[in-house]
Length: 117
Image 1 (cartoon, rainbow, N blue to C red):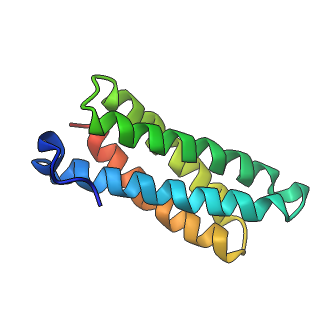
Image 2: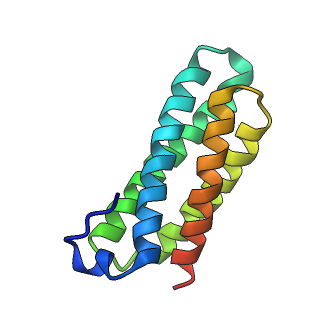
């Protein structure tokens, strides 16, 4: 849950939701990537995308927390990466991929909201 002591975050429900979804997506991606690492070459793209998204989403959450001027641009990049990774995860039947795809869809939606504000 986003810190309510940070004024610009606590006053903005969209930002709170986006920060929370970014950290949840990062957790899901790290788990998914770790599981994919043991499943062979056919999971290499899923693993790579999950690691990229985990880095992007945590960076975006940090940028929002510090009220960075670059947050909107990063939100757009983050949303695109989340959508691409979700599509890859949805191709696989593994539970970790399906859980990850769901978290990524939520994150992409809130990042798009942040990019448009």
